[in-house]
Image (cartoon, rainbow, N blue to C red):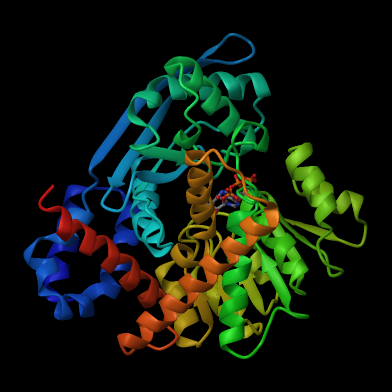
Length: 446
Ligand code: NDP
């Protein structure tokens, strides 16, 4: 049940944003947590902080025309939602996937506000993307799309305004094309305008690995808080993109055994532990489908068209997409001996699934906390760009680990403060919200 004041705010969000179901879900999850905060801080309600947080500061929608290799013209839709800049310039990735529409961009942008706040770094929240599908497209096609996308986006972004990065479908290749076009149009080598850049042109060590590594560090802390570790644990990961690959890498370094991962065609089960070099070759170099993994590693099996969550594991690290763990999946996972979940993806568990995990006493680390390492390291990239400096891999990874430990500890301490011990969802939402709310109060009615 929502706090009475929040209930009418939520009804308003539903009315003003029709059909945007993922956005509704993300707002509801935060509102469910912050009722007790309003009791302690009536000033937030008086200044309509929550109503203001639910309304993006600016939403940009634009046409993206481009030509394929045969000369045929295509039209996609581009988005940038600049949600909240109380803590710093808007910061958040770009997603290229056919499912992208305003409701997805707004859910991601809304989550990003609290995630960025949790990092403790000076970054606001935003998100963007397009319904363009890079799958099966040549490098030339991807480049022309990125150039067209940036030809509109460039006028809205900047080092002190809005700083995009990657997300699903936007990796190092796309960031390079986007930055190249920004530089060409503006005639400015403004490194801090985009993060996730290659190391050759202003990128930062560990940014590529940061979301996956950070998520593994977060789970390590959750396990430590329960007196255990990754050592010898059976781990199941979904996805096989950027977040999944570096989650697997760090989990293996920390002693866990990742037995399964997936893509949208199915999953592979490899009881000897996923061969990361082979997975990287298939996904990052050949950009092929996952069944190729089982063709090259005969003892592994590829299971088409099924969810990876049917594979028993003690730790689950969803790293593919939103709402990929249903209530039913969660019940199966708990019955199969699950003890911890660390969300590398954004909102991968449905509300029913979260309820199952929480009622079963699973250590459940929500995406806003567990995957904040990506954006935190983006903020470190901005810091290095601003000072024309570049840090070593070891130092950058150490900073990432400290940040993840700090986020973990603050989530737990805040949950304790509000009488909800071990509830990382409440801890993350309340702690993330308070910092933004205080900044908004201080800045006046803007
Ligand atoms: P990638 O595009 O690199 O990889 C996405 C992976 O998930 C692919 O294996 C893809 O399979 C799979 N996938 C995507 N959609 C679906 C679907 N509908 N069903 C099944 N599998 C699917 O993206 P990232 O690794 O960057 O992002 C993954 C998640 O992590 C997203 O939720 C993103 O928002 C989140 N995230 C990413 C951050 C980053 O730094 N990149 C930071 C924080 C969160 P296929 O290739 O078959 O589509």
